[in-house]
Each structure stands twice: as C-alpha cells, then as structure tokens.
Length: 273
Image 1 (cartoon, rainbow, N blue to C red):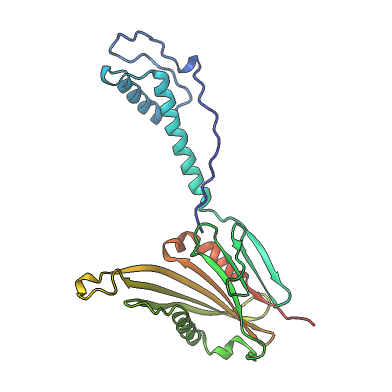
Image 2 (image 1 turned 45 degrees about the vertical axis):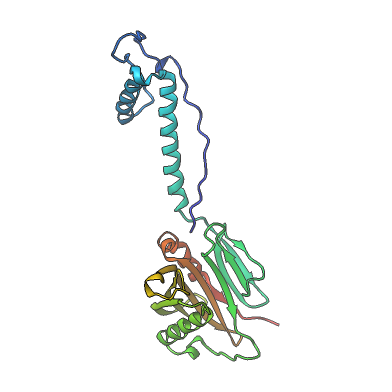
C-alpha cells in the first residue's frame, strides 16, 4: 500500500520564563543554567550541547533561536515517525458488489476506480500506480464452466495463468526479456461453499538501454520492473471469474496484509433473472 503522509499541527513552543537562563551574563564563557522541564533527559543533553555551540564567538546565535531550532527539529522528527507508522497501518476497506455480473469484493478505501481500463472493474492505488486490482469474466457465449476444477489442478492452472500473463505482456521492442515463475498455487472452499483457486506469480522485465547498438558492450541490460501478481479464480453462472492484483515487489511486503484481505473477500454469486 502506498505510504500516506499526514502532517499534523503542533503548538509552537512557549518561550516562558521556565526556558530562560537563570544566568544572563553573556560575557561569561559558560552557558547559563537553563531550566527546561518539558524536555526528556536525552533532549536536555543535546540541548545543552547545542546551545553552548551557539554562544561561541564564531557562531553567535541567540538562545531564543536555539530553542526554536531545537524544538522544530524535535517536532519534525516526531511528526515523521508517527505518520510513517500510521501510513503502514491498514487503511480500511469498502465493499463492491456487482449484482449484474455476479461477484463481490472488498478493496482499500483510498483506492480509486479507473474507467475504460479494459476490465470489468479496475481500482488502483492513487500514489503507487502499479498497485491495482481488476476483475475479468469469461464470455457467457463462449464458455460453459461448471467448476474451477475444469482448469485442472491448481498447479496446472497456475502454469496456464503465467503463460497468459506473458502473452499479455509480450513486447515488440528489441532486447526485451522476461523472467517469470509461479510462486504458489492453492485451492480453498470459502464460506459460500464454492471452490476457489489462488495463484501467485512473479514477473521481471529487462531491456537494453540501447537496443540498436552494434557492439554488445554498448547494450547494457537493466531491469524495467519487478511485479507480483495474485489471482483468485472462481466459477459461477457458467463463467470463469478472475480477480487479479498487481503490486511492485518492493511494495509487496508493506501491502501484503491488505492485498490478502482483498483476495479472501472475493466471491462469485448466482445471478437471478
């Protein structure tokens, strides 16, 4: 899931008498005795060192500015730490139900729907554009599925699914190479009594930086992208339903919990006339 940074407002530090030096003799080479009850012991030590440096002749800055600088740094650090932790937490979910085509799922509530993406439904993360989900349904006129087991065992379905992905991502560019493998396949009976397949694959894309170069040393191979695809397959209404989730590998670890909840929520439903 993408990281969302929420900036919080903190009150400005009060420069009351409790923060003023009890010894205001600026001619003294020693820093005055400060009282700062609002600081932790670790910050007090840093504050003394910081303020002492500001009162040297080569770097003369008022203690008021020193206080403001110190508290600004503390506030920024606290804000970043808290907001990073919050960004890694689950953002919550919304439910999507398609009564006409017969399926339902839950998706992260901050994701947006994209129209005209070629799938029956398409949602994506607003910040990490390569993190998205889609649902595809086989044509009712050309498919007569009775069960997801018509695809064979999960292992066979996973291999065929990977071939389908590679066909979809086929490129006419010179020097493009794809590496792929099936990470896992499984089957489960959900709470609706139906059997579902879950398939997980990884695909990497490599390309030359100068595919028209004559000399091999001038064609440097670089990785374009590295993605994980998670699919859930189900059958109902004589049609095959596929929920597909796509996520960059570098994002997968942080987003895994939410993505697996989306997978577990996918259901196919009987269409009533």
